[in-house]
Amino acid sequence: MVRVLISPSYGSPETRRHWADTVERQVDFTQSRCDSLLAVDQRAQLRILHPEGQARFWGAAPAHDRKFTDVITGDVVLFTGQNQVRAIGEVGAIFRNRALADLLWPPKADGTSWHTIYSLVDLVPADIPYDELNAAIGYKPAHNFPGQMVLRGDRARSVLEDFMITPSGEEPPAIDPTGRDTDPVRIAALEELRTNRTGYRRSRRLIVVDRREARLVREYRDFLAVRGLTARRFFCPSGISDMYVEAAGEAEVIEAKSAAGHSHVRQALAQLLDYAPHSPSPARLLTALFPELPEREDVELLHRYGIDCVHRESSGGFHRLPASSERRALMREVWSGKPPVPAAG
Image 1 (spheres, helix red, strand yellow):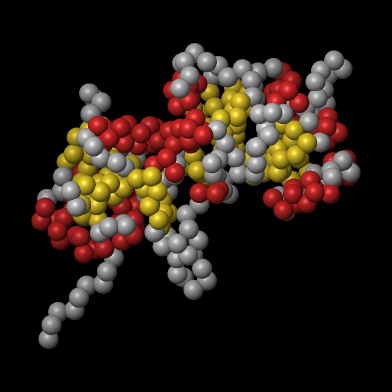
Image 2 (cartoon, one colour; image 1 turned 45 degrees about the vertical axis):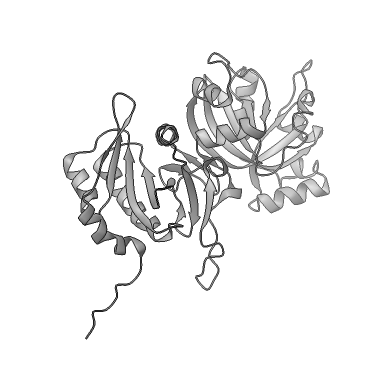
């Protein structure tokens, strides 16, 4: 299970200077001043993860050694400051090296050195307020994250799920050179998989969904759970579905959007048609989920392709505008992705 680090990064002037020096700017660790301080295994680890010879770095003081005992490459770090998560990263190389730490972050004369160092294989801007983060962890709303934390188990899972964060280890299945899927379709419970395929800000590996979209998915998941329905997702060659529900013998594929404008409706339409052929069970319903009611013409666009529209109501509930059963029936062959059967004769 991926661990989640919570690391203050904007408190004191010293911390802000460290951020500017080694996170906002990449460090060339191949220069002699850094390279000469690296152990052989540390140098090898960095070169494998950062072949370009540059990386962003952060770290921790010896007081946090016990917290960092099991932190490894691929764990997620939330950088906090100014009452919000300001960036989300993925841990790359991690090791202890006091001499390099003192070079990167010179301590005050009477200050404490850092000696745990980790590089970041990815860094994505974020804007998650503390109250939402506290709710995900189960803390009181006023908690302000004064020091380093490492979340494990259910707490880490809750953060990753609620904010739809997917580290590189949860990438969609690869496709081999012959064009065949190495893992065609795999279903995952929501707690196993924390992202959707669009509406996210992405660097090379880490995926972080827009928090408005993540909140909408969380609310609709809870709405379904009250009605006895379990939302899951599936990996497929097209990516990762937002939500997948099986009920009363029918499979439903759901795509959520952070807004209800025309461009978002078109995105939802395209993604649903992309995912539908890979549905673990034949898709009987395709549904686009929005935070408010789209324009009438956009609802009609979805209905033209047999796709239902669900939107959040001001009361906090959700309302479904279904496509006609005739249009759904007509489009199911298209959804399946199977070529039409030629007419006899």
